[in-house]
Length: 137
Image (tube, rainbow, N blue to C red; front, side):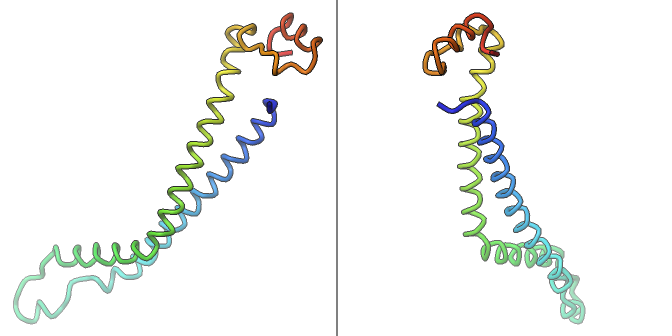
């Protein structure tokens, strides 16, 4: 059975790994945005439409933007999917660890006797101390 300090250290490591995964996803988003920003001037209205006397179609520029964004995103989609799955697994693991840690601390605050378990005691003296002073000892 892990001690509470070991669980807190593990939780801290898991949360840092999750932050790093989220940073990688954010970096991919920024890279896609940067590429789209450089393409925007090229996606503007085509001048050939003006030469023929027709007004420019405002939705055509938006449609070109969306198709280019989809193409650029599709290039990175396997990486995005893998990181998203990893992030979901990390969230689930962190949630489970928090759930395991939280009931013990919540019960200790409410009723120290409910938290007392023989498998948590190191010795019979430790059990007596816990019974006498609550789970904080």
